[in-house]
Length: 268
Image (cartoon, rainbow, N blue to C red; front, side, top):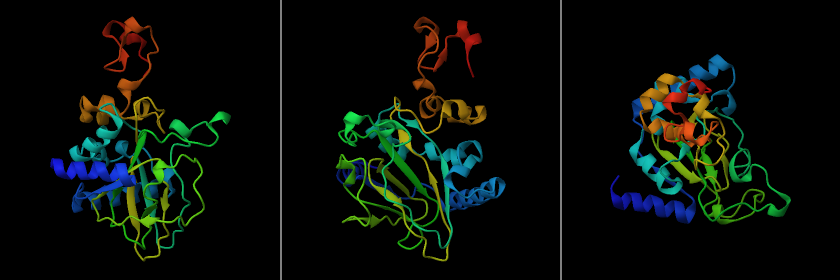
């Protein structure tokens, strides 16, 4: 990605709350991801998002979600160099799947996790605290269950979006291999799949390192997966963001664990 293209994506997110990065996965990688999603759905007998989780531990293809330089560049611009992955979910929407309600994220984790009475149902909009990343493993079209959103809605401080349809609401169309990136304050939802084709996607939310993740990936990531991620993996999986559970002089913040002399006190 050249500087001009990068600046355009950044401006689009700042103005509308989302952008689409094309050509992030090859056709071959998309086919492999589809096959693995179907395999995992069959194994778990669960086609919901919650049933196909922590994908990086379950097939090498899903390790790609944090290995793409252009995507990481955009994520780190908005969330900082120490941005952390918050989850990795599969999404399979069969023909006839109904649409979902309009919502913003952060209600289970992050700044909307436990609103205080004094918040008056208002959310933080002054800074980008999290980005949602959707890998289009299939083409996203107006009829196959693609994500719909309301451009600019991330700027509204109301925690509760109005009933759909909202003026300006649009379905994001994107080709297979593209990545939809949007501010998690942007009102969005899945549209109805009116086509005869199954729509596949991988959802990988990212958060600032000090926001509680959806899953404690520092405890969940498989050792071999973490090793393949290299030094970057300590940031991506939140290991370097862990609060010390020993005294400060015993703790190595860079590695997210005890110093060598106190390795015997490591909890995991």
